[in-house]
Length: 103
Image (cartoon, rainbow, N blue to C red; front, side, top):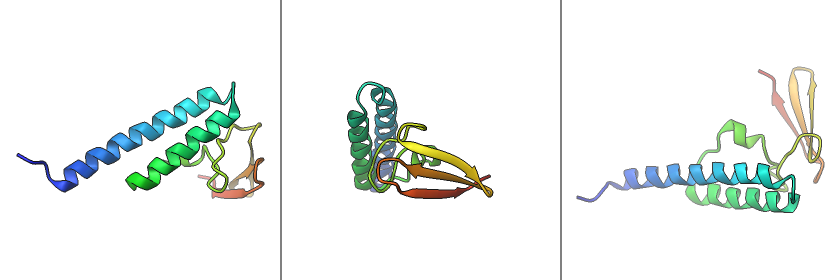
């Protein structure tokens, strides 16, 4: 018996999300040796994200710059500040500022 289309899509999205998480973990490990490789892993994860139409968990959203697709490592590629009830992320690669509410 064939599986329904929605079941197949759900399985594809779950496997894509697992692959995206694996790519972010690989980027974290690779950043110490070669930052450019980590940035490529994030770009690949973003392409997979768009292709599979998956919503990225909030934890992973805060690990890369949406403009230049660089992997964020606090102190090296991103500056994190707490000001006026907000978390302010400043990408040190492209200088983009991202403000999120605290809490």
